[in-house]
Length: 409
Image (cartoon, one colour):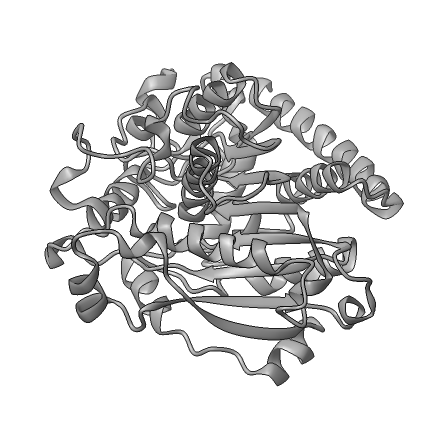
């Protein structure tokens, strides 16, 4: 019988008809992972490789008509000046060679109800997209979420077009620039919420900003909030007020990629540790893994003193993905600093399972759990979310019990 350490879920597809498995694998939800392998083999789901990530840089911007027809949302785009991100010594070279514009782009998505709201009353969710630090656009995964946030919470959703990392061969690592871009955009949005400077943001409440980041965007969300709190402790005018919440969704936090989960999920069919190393190499170049990496580049290097002042935080990660252990370590750092923090580790979840296969029971439960956290944080009572959550959780628990029974049989 194979031992836990000799089996990697993501090395090769498992044979679902072999019953002789180490029962300790139950903690990785063997049943659920085998099911996903079947979907992957049938090409129902497929992870993106680095080539497709790079191509996503050139994704066409959706039209206003498309955004309205598909999502029922209105959209505004803004180009805002960089502030903190202009400080790096390589800024000019990076702008000339790697960046389309010297400004930070943001997308604001909202429903028609926003324009009927009173000044300064609606929550704002500030979204940072994923893409392994070198792929994606401000629309990556954003409009689907913005539609839900608008319908559930009447929230104004903002997505930032931060600078993406070059390839490692370009020899121009971006360092803290993506964090600075996100920080600049967040500060710009903060100052306009509840004022007459912007026709949409004026309806937003600057005391109810929730920062939400996915994958690489989760790492950038953590580093952006860390910088925000750091500026606040210094008494800087750059970060004039507190944030209301933080959601870290499968966050990419640690450039060293040396945890046990990184070692376990180094190869395979889904997002692996080797993929993560490629993203960090593109971002940091030869500095990756050395002591010359700052907490604003790789937030896993932060101490409890560095995260002082973090808002209430929700962290989630899949059990069967390379970022599992670094997410747990960051949770422990926040907990040690007395931050109000909650964490979920989802059995059988590979990186991005909740979007790759959103109809799976565990994906539905995962996404509903995030919604419930947002409801609690924003003080919203939503009976439909609660009822759906109870229904899905009951089905999920029964499915887990069935999976365990199959392993024992």
